[in-house]
Image (cartoon, rainbow, N blue to C red; front, side, top):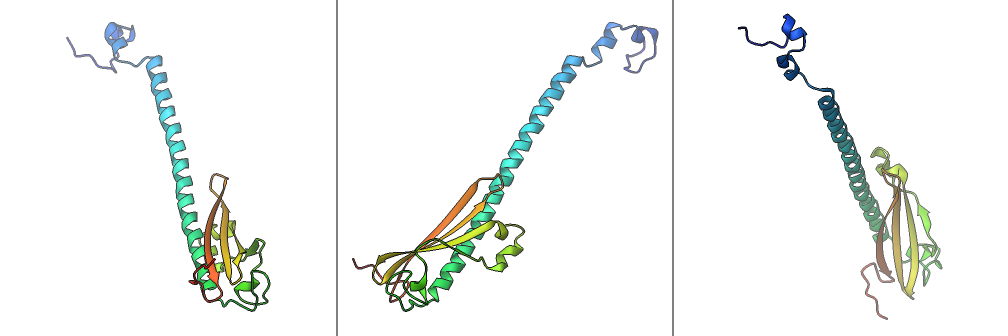
Length: 168
């Protein structure tokens, strides 16, 4: 007797012998395998999308922190000015407006694909008391998945310098 072959052309193999039926997959097995593969692939696509969103958020947080730190360095080099409280001076920190003012982001941040171009920077100054101003910088951007994110930095600037203490 010859060993059984899937590709046998003998009459018994073609007639649907028990050996022939055992050698093939049923349509239900094939459909089950296809359904499982579809679920695995669709799940992996969702995981990839969430991964890209997380990478984008981390990258934007890093750039926002760099932009805010750069603005703080500019404030550190700025004098108090000729005013006594926020918004009363014509120069220096005392000339900063008490309403949110949009500031132009340094063009060096625009080279990072689209990160710098989708961010906005605002500055707000509020009085703590005469001779002390609270300065808030805020960077806002639209994330990869469409929702808005914000990063704030706050400092207090005294008439005698950025590291002056608050004496109430």
